[in-house]
Amino acid sequence: MNIIIGTKNPAKIKAVQAAFQLYEAEFHALDIPSGVQDQPFSDEETIKGAINRAYGALAAGKGEIGIGLEGGVQETAYGLFLCNWGALVVEGKPPIIAGGARIPLPDEVAKRLIAGEELGPVMEIFAKKEDIRKKEGAVGVFTNGQVSRADMFTHVMKLLVGQYEYQK
Ligand SMILES: O=P(O)(O)OP(=O)(O)OP(=O)(O)OC[C@H]1O[C@@H](n2cnc3c(O)ncnc32)[C@H](O)[C@@H]1O
Ligand SMILES: [Mg+2]
Image (cartoon, rainbow, N blue to C red; front, side, top):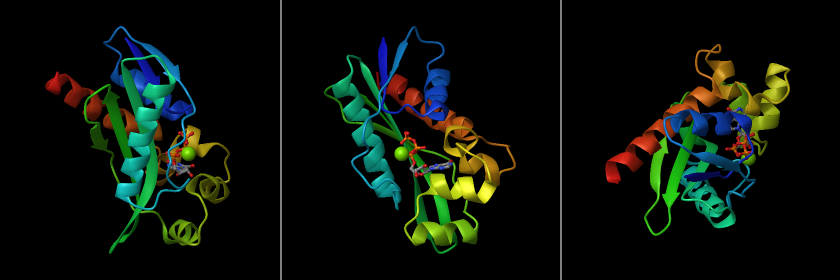
């Protein structure tokens, strides 16, 4: 089975591979645009980005399954929360969707995003480290390394693969 992943971000690729580890699968990672803002600002926009990437991946690569994983933020009465969504698509069927764990962002980070900056670069300044989005992620930084971005996306991927198996 060929699985086309709509990103080259290693934290996301690792999560896809982990969730399909019992499958005889070949993975192909392609840079696919999300079709939404670089910094999605709601669950709905983030879901749309994940679905767009999953269908984009399926269309661009020759495979049976397309995967889209997208990170965003959602405003709430309790602050700006990280949100992450995934989509698994198979030709001719509606997308399978799953969401990831969420935590509030510190005010200092939230303010910069509300002012129009992107989380990736803001995290590099905040944590004084490069490539956080490809490694532990904001979720890893703000949970003291307890849950990395790959861990969080692995959970999303298990929710997707589990639904895919149930619906088969
Ligand atoms: O290459 P792609 O797949 O696009 O990976 P990405 O890291 O840009 O991830 P997203 O597009 O899904 O994330 C949307 C934005 O949020 C940032 N972001 C999301 N989650 C993050 C995290 O855990 N740590 C740091 N930046 C994050 C990311 O850099 C983007 O600015
Ligand atoms: Mg991106």
